[in-house]
Length: 411
Image (cartoon, rainbow, N blue to C red; front, side):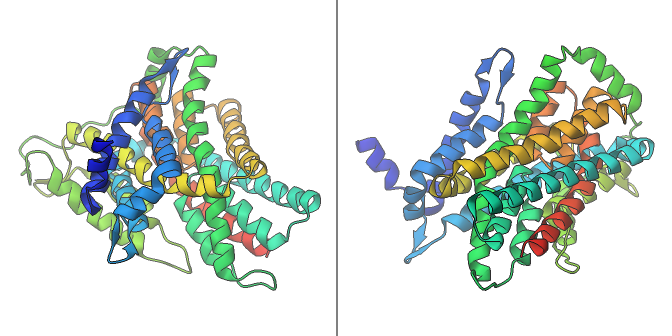
């Protein structure tokens, strides 16, 4: 009890830091548990973060209250965004050297697969909306807002979530603020399976298919051959680890992602990913190296994923318990599984993509950051990030448009 009282005496940022490392340590321990060759990996951090948010969010809110104003939501958003920037920028740098060659070879496949996944997700969302209105008789504005929120959560898509909230309008039954809150609830409910479902999928498919990972890595290397480095070793390095170059690209990516055109933007995720892909491709500007060290990128990728899952998980855990309904959770499962399974089958039998390119594209089409981290570990190669990075921008744009269209149709 004295220890617990001592912990609660820690205030503001120090308490948040304590919680972040506590969740990380327990999450990685959970992720190490392996059952028949399947483990949660880094997604174990997300599970612990959800549980922490469900049971201890009020304590965190109390400790992060300054002069009567709670800052817990903003603090968690900072943790989440910092993690997202570290992760996607690292992925962009890692995929950059081979990205454009791979994109040129499989350009049509990535476009078709990215669009197919999002269209199937949109159609499943529309079907659930119609079903819910007819069976439960709820108002179409409420159901539309809830289900589009579920769609963005199922695809773990922050851009779709933001676009849906921005598209809702006042109606005879609900104000825009009420509908925005409903969208947020739907997103929180579906986010859990949206993360765990894709993470398990990319592990179970190779296991059930008895895939030989050494052979699959060889196929991936054959279709995505290694690109010779453009660095000669004589370039000027801005610092020994590449922190400066990484930071410059992250800053530029955030700026690019902040530009909006008619309510659409690349967001921080898209901006950082695209700028890092370009920087990774060219590797240098004149005689100056802009490519961070490989070890730096691997550490930032894992650290970023961890922070992202903690920030999103703690906030999601609070709303998940508060607004959970089984029927909404089932809708979310449908919107995660159906696009993923159809996309995988289509990529395998129609597009003829090899297993790792297929799964990498599925991660990108599902806009699933956590699943990519798991796939890299499962595959044993960073090259799967290329397929993710190629499909992700297509899915990013498509899911924003589909979400806005659904809100308008069921307004």
